[in-house]
Amino acid sequence: MSTVVVPLILAGGQGTRLWPMSRAARPKQFLPLTGPTSLFQQTLERVANQRYAAPVVITNSEYRFIIGEQAAEIGVDLTAVLLEPVARNTAIAIIAGAAFISRRFGPDSLIHVLPSDHKVIVDDGYWASLDNAADAATRGQLVTFGISPTYPETGFGYIRSEARVGGAASAVQHFAEKPDAERAHKMLSEGGYLWNSGMFMLEARRLLAEAERLAPDTYRAAVESVAQAREDLDFIRLEEASFAKAPQISIDYAIFEKTERASVVAVDFAWSDLGSWDAVWKNGEQDDAENVSVGAVTLTDVSRSLVITDHAHVAVTGLEDIAVIATNDAVYVGRLSEAQKVSDVVKRLKSRQQTSALTEIHRTAYRPWGGYASVLNGERFQVKRLFVKPGKKLSLQKHHHRAEHWIVVRGTAEVTVDGNVTVLSENQSIYLPLGCVHRLANPGKIELELIEVQTGSYLGEDDIIRIEDEFGRT
Image (cartoon, rainbow, N blue to C red):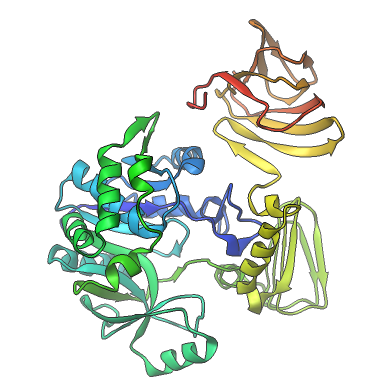
């Protein structure tokens, strides 16, 4: 394959089936579920190859700084980060990405559409399938990658085709919805079915032509939102009014199930969408009793189970087929074999005002400068742990309803209060009276960690008046 392929990485999903680790504010693609790097970073590393151009990432505004931070951590350059102003599923995201790539790289560019939350093992079969898909795409086909099924999975859609592993792309006969267990077993025994991976190879102009013909509303919304996009720091904001006109529909329904150009390349390289805790268990490093454990875990007479903790020590005894997922503010316990039911739990939590926040945010909140974790809350006071990356600074700001006291635990803090600058080291502290204009910065070479004590009549995060901000949040 001589043509350079442009990766289009979809990074806007929220991954609720991996609650409580994955939440709206930091979903599964940004979590290190299968190693020291996140799934998004593993996707970037996969395309850091001479066969690929620098990737284009499309995500929502909330994740823009996580995207930039995680790409920088592993030294991968990005062509662009496109920000979706509203959530509209994969059709508008992929078509807008194609419109942008067509303008940037040319209309005959090949696009490899990749979800950012899948685990893929790159081998010779991977590169062979890429070549086969690229060949078909240059001949005008819209190509999807079908995974050769190894068990009767009910969490995936399926593709019916005569495609064979290692062979050329073959026409899609039809797409099948996620089956029940009985139907999944029947499809596996019949043969001729592949798992729908959600990965695609497309020529930009061919996808845009098919979108204009088959999904004109989505096409117009995508093209107009790209044409009127504006740059914001290192990001490109797609124009909201045009983008919002697009229907909420997937690329499968909008294009692939309608077009006569749909084809599939059958592959058998190691792949998982890690869409459930059961999938994480299957892809984890199992002990002799088929357990996967991460974090501070003690297991006694436990088998075929998954236990993950990022906070408290978890001890489990005398159980089989169990998933225990513990964070610092929520614990999930259920049958590992019924891991798909986590989505039902999330829906119940989200429907109640008392628990909806548990599906949205972690106790630790990440910001482009670092982040903070809630330690203790009470009436008219709150204690937080703040961490600031080397060379970063918070916005110049003030509060109407609270005063703050900062104690440095580690590193060096540069504190500005009403124009006066003070440098603090470990075990030193400073008081910030209500209404003062202040800023915190880390001038050092190690992470700054401090304890913040807030007191006042209102302690919400919306009591921040930003005056200056290097991240464009004023």
